[in-house]
Image 1: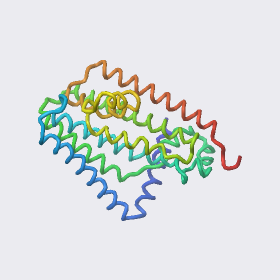
Image 2: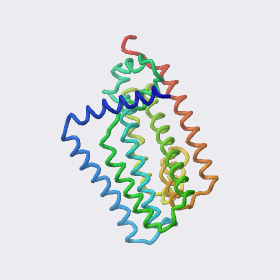
Image 3: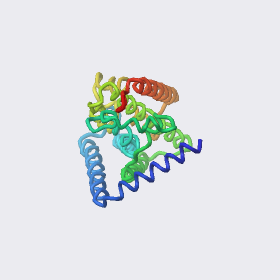
Image 4: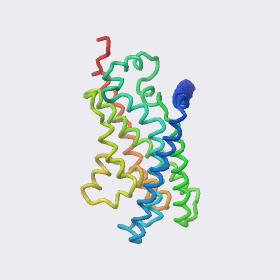
Length: 264
């Protein structure tokens, strides 16, 4: 148990040294965070200046969805995407055969491939996500009971699991087509998760709920925060995320068997 934690700490330290070597990276990342924060917030404000609610979703609830989206996106940018994205593309480790070094390490390959690279500047995005969530809680004007807090934390963990499973599955496809950036396909759909899944028309809502369930990642925690989360939905979300993680892990290990090392 302690060994993975020590390895993760070493990975974080190495990533910090790499990022802090270039001071300009901090200011560029800060500007990018500010732009993402401003455009996301402005979109919600402009929408609800025209209407009071959209398909039953009011301003405070939609703001909660945006806050969850920003929080989950920050976690994705912190370590999931930097690690898994390094596998794909023409300069990716699988294409160049550098994945050999990962396979030779005496530790679980999926674990190393998932946590070896960190982008610590994403902590700024995480802080901004918490700020939006705090404003959303204030706007909801609901008493934050212990049940609300526990439900929100649980659903946020479930969303993190589901996001990791989706990204791992897309990264696993790289073993079949090393030069293709599958993450780009996911990025377009994930942008839609900044708004409640109930706002989208029927077919698209079905896609965002069951095929590539990015809508579940943000909408379910937001409903938990507002106290509008049925126990059945909580149980169903957990079952979906657990099945997704298991399926993605199987796909990743199947892909490993297809990998042709640089020495073969």
